[in-house]
Image (tube, rainbow, N blue to C red):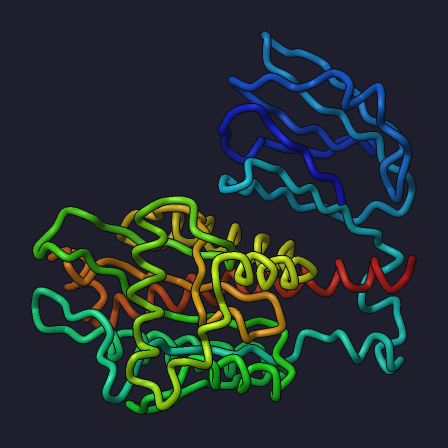
Length: 343
């Protein structure tokens, strides 16, 4: 793994491999030259050099024997680039999959959480569309795709019908089933209807940075008023919530990577805009002890988004894009775990 911090926002760099060298091409950014001078060989990376082509920096990573493939992800929220380099000798087919250590970390359970439900309708769209129904529709479409194409992966729903499930119980369901990935599906909205706000976005569990993120989390968290014991969440003050977020740090790089893959797939496949990766304090993510994200699939307060989200074709497209991200993430996750176990 190689993390690169940048001094200004940028897009995922172009990349290529030739003669056992990995090239990363940047534009409109400044790279600190000390990155190369302070570099120490590690893993499959033997050397790192910075060169300039037409005024733009180019990173050259010299790779050792054993290189198999690589992935590059850009997290615009924390302004970092993650380069994952895989060893061909540590690929799944070259290892003993019957070993207890490998089995323990196999990617074999996905928990799909359809937000709201029952007496909690969630947001109400301009056309009367209820968020809880859209969430469940997408969740079921996604579950069927996983069951049909990843037959060795178990699908767990926090709800599979129009029922009310308390927030803390959703995380409890995920933990009891030993989930490897927790995906909470929601729809967005604005107080004013109709509105021009449009698009799909993914959230990570961290204290909110913007008023919009804080307001969205406040709305999604307000469901606790319908629960039997809303006071169970009282200890989650701002300070304690930061500690909870820190406790999730071991899973955060996986959550970040999956979020980036989701955003990439949406930009390729979805008819509504991709609004990027954000962070907020969603209570539903607090209890899940595994990599997790919350998806806001579009704005029910927007005419075009609401029409798309209410259609079977729109729900299928969103589910398909999430599934494609899951397929890529699974390979990334398993390779990363295998690399860690084999060190």
